[in-house]
Image (cartoon, rainbow over all chains, first blue to last red; front, side, top):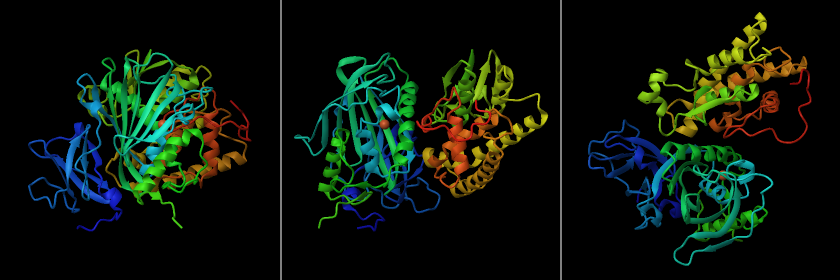
Length: 298
Length: 222
Ligand SMILES: [Fe+2]
């Protein structure tokens, strides 16, 4: 087995997002970093993804790439694994519905751990203060009672019945409304939220955060949407999402400690934290050590 | 109405939005997707600005690029009080010009480090950070000495000028590029004062001033 800088098998043996697929061109080589390993990736002439460790020299796509890594394209992104990946990535069936628009909405480098980024994504309590006038506003600051569980169908954290008043819930919103959310955490570094669509009361828009761990305290955050919106332009939807993420970024970068503490009662729980407690407990049960402060069993 | 070719996460575009906020000047924002779309390097935008840079304004057919140039134009044309760009005071105007050039150096260093860390631009980030710290030490000392003389803005005037606007965005956003402000207390006090100017608008990554007492120095308060 190849030596890796990261030695935590829990995170090594995952699929990790590396790049928005719609920004890859055939045979153009791009560099990135995953779990401290410099990598190159490209699509070959047939459009198949190729990911390999970067040797430091000028990367070329000439058929001589050393030991390619497991790689695949899914949900708008290139994914790869440094260890032994699971057979399947988590399910995200909405992306296959023909009347939805799937689009990568922005990729940003952030100085924070992956766990902190996911935890912020799950937290409704910050909406009125950080996304003022868009995803929340005072005095509507209360986080109402909601349910969190480990899903019965597969190993993922699920939060349901989350309700929150939002002045402008989506790019296509014209007025404020109480919006219902469902959160899924189907992967240690990926989360999807579903919210009532302003364009179809029976169905939900999906917004996903796929986090690429660059190091234990540094990530690349990839955002993605699968929406029922025929009116907003791709650029309009992306710019809306970038506004939201731009507001979260300084909050994330001011988290202390930057690694996610997994010890019970490491930080005082309030209702908004219910999903965060479940998420931390779930990570702890997997034995994750990278990018977190593990609970010390004594 | 003024059209501003704009990208919400750009500190240079934010300079123009700030001045419009302070002047109560209405404008239409035309979004140009810098990241990831790179629309500022696309053929459509290059016809507007061959340099492929934001921001650009179009004021009734008069097209102008460069954040500092746009600030001077808008302030000279639309500030009836003539305080933001004090054209009648030669020395003061010279100092404003000096700090506008300093703002360009902040863009070349602090903003470059942010582009590297947040948007993956390929550049020497250590050199960019070191350059920003050098500038911030000069700025912090300047503001500290100004405070000793009872002045609260970059230039020796009772009101803020476009020099304050030009320097503010990439100072306040510098932590996104790994340049931390804890060692620059006078800069932090000045940032807080800028945020309390009536008409201040935030941007993603820049929050309004918190509640609490206004800063102790109120000479020539606005
Ligand atoms: Fe947020």
